Amino acid sequence: MAVSRPRLLLLIAVPAWLLCVTLYRSHRLCSGRVVFDASGALPSYAYLLFRSRIRALRKKRGRLYPSTEGVPETGFAVVNCRIDTDHLRQYCSAAGYGWDYPDSAFRDIPLLYPAVLCSRLFATIVSSAGFRLSPLGLLCLQQTVRKLQPVDELKKGPFQLQASVSEYRPVSAGVEVDVSFKAVGDAGPVWESQITLLSPKTKHLQCHQDRLTQADGTDAGTRVEIRVSWSTGLRWTWTLYGHFLKHLLWIQRPTAYGLWMQSQCLAEVEKHKGADAVRAPVSVHVLYRQPLVLPGRASIRIWEDRNDASFPAQKACRFQMEDPKTRDLFILGEVRS
Image (cartoon, rainbow, N blue to C red):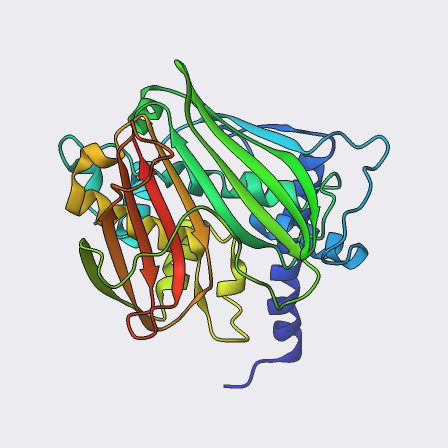
């Protein structure tokens, strides 16, 4: 049945009006504010995505812009946060832990779950006026996560999430930036993380150099092969509440997000090494090598590191996700307790 022209205009006008109202409310909410209250309104992801596109029109990739006079240093916080059990189950299901993981005895909330909770703060930072790089084209090179107390401590009451830019570094490939995150409970800091992003001058980049080394073919350890469906990006995007909307607007072949790959690896570490392998205090360091194109297959390898003289007093478990045929690395990491 044909739709009349007035009705068609109405079908277009109403969603457009609602979108404009949402953008305007979020704009008013963000104006001059660095602390948000989770018990009230938060900036919408649609607004943050729109704002990042506007900022990108004024900034080129790979260039560090000077600080703007009158604009404060880039740092934001969300207070009165609480754990949403349904969202936690959704994350556990998408990240390889299983939907019923929160019900398991002697299991802490997964190590990377606070990173998901910080996704809105990350979007707020890179789209803010004080961020000195283009918000588009940022590549994640590495991430360090530290669990200072059991993440379950955040269940005891309202907690606070914090995010800030730590440092900008011009390098040959472009400009690197360190962004730090914290989850703070009543008893102090529970979890912290730092990611290193690159705003590249060119698409052709060499791998980031670090002390971590890839496992060779003779290394003993655990090997798990997984099948990654095309819907992985959609499920993870839904878990992040729409922050990475590029997965919904596929122009090229979709790829698995790095945080998802890291979550899958840590889930396998816990399955094969036990909950004590990731019990606080613990530190995880990860290098991101190349994207995993969907759909596809991946192989997760886990092994003990007994030859590292740098940290003789610490137990180290290393992991990597690779292409099972070519052995090209997707991510490489280690867990230290």
